[in-house]
Amino acid sequence: MLPLFRHLKSQLIAARGFVRQLAILGSTGSIGRQCLSVVESLAGRFGVVALAAGGNLVELAGQIKKHKPEVVSVGDSNRVDELVAMLREKGVARLPAIHHGREGMLAVGTHSKADIVVSAAVGVVGLEATYEAVKLGKTVALSNKEVLVAAGELVMAAAKKAGRELLPVDSEHNAVHQCLRGGTHGEIRRLVLTASGGPFRKTPLVALASATPEQALAHPNWRMGNRITIDSATMMNKGFEIIEARWLFGVRPDQIDVVVHPQSTVHSMVEFVDGSVLAQLGPTDMRMPIQYALTYPERLASNDLALDWTRLKRLDFAKASARRFPCLRLAREAMKKGGAFPCALNAADEIAVAAFLERQLPFLGIPEVIERVLVRTPRVRFERMEDVLTADAEARRMAREEVAKLAVTAAAAS
Image (cartoon, rainbow, N blue to C red; front, side):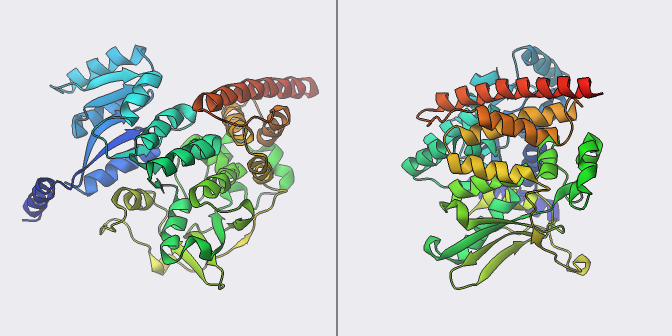
């Protein structure tokens, strides 16, 4: 009887016109896959009209068969025929319109039927499409850090003009968003973002020089994509989150603190002017903030997600060490300078992390490359999205140069 009941309930919801249509940028990544898992768990509440992916065609083909989007995008033109062949092998009778590259991302992000655009693509690849979605007044569920780190001022100005709120998917900002429902903006004393401390929280500082990609990818609490996992190890992800929080919640930089909380149970806190602190707790499962963003302002029941209080023995908090995590300092410096500096911070980090994963750069070379790029970055104020993309490309070029220089130095020393 239960499956029949769920089927009838789904039909009723659809008949009442409550079905929200989604476009997902980065559908085959970790957040994209978990977003579709949430959609499947809330049968009848959401439809999927557009999906954008990179090169994981096997995953994308399965998503297309299950969710039947009208439009999809792949990384480049060479993938289009390959995807068509896969879909025909799977017996998909009605193929979606298939786009690729920049034009494809824009087609997905601006789809006319999309009520919610989930921005989950890794890197600046999803920046322009997300910006256009915001300008169109679509609800944007934001997971892509680069959107606000690289172009926060432009994106938030567009959101204000459209009269729409960006809904954060990152667990930390999602937690702040939930806590702020308990007070007004003028009552905020400070936001406190929690950080697990990653795999190197207690590693002797001298040992960090020889840290391997395998060690850095061994996050103690979360299962995420490679780049964000390395960013957790360097705590650059928390630096990005400071910049994001500044834009999302309209607070001053000095109103944002970071504390190390190894259990990752308290996702973030808001301290109000009267000394009261509201904290949001939950399991280390990204489906919870995803569901919150998709269903906001409602809260819907979930049978799969719950905090196991019997396993919660203690909650520890400690100061985040700038000596251990120099990327935190670099992020605050970039935020203070503004303009092109946060964009360069993000671009340099992406190049440096990739070089580390490819064993071209030592772990401590990541902040070194970033700092060198920031020193070379000119003061530029962004007026258009083209300015952001130009600054991003230039920072990446400089970062590759700095990686090459460090590699030559390391080779000479050995």
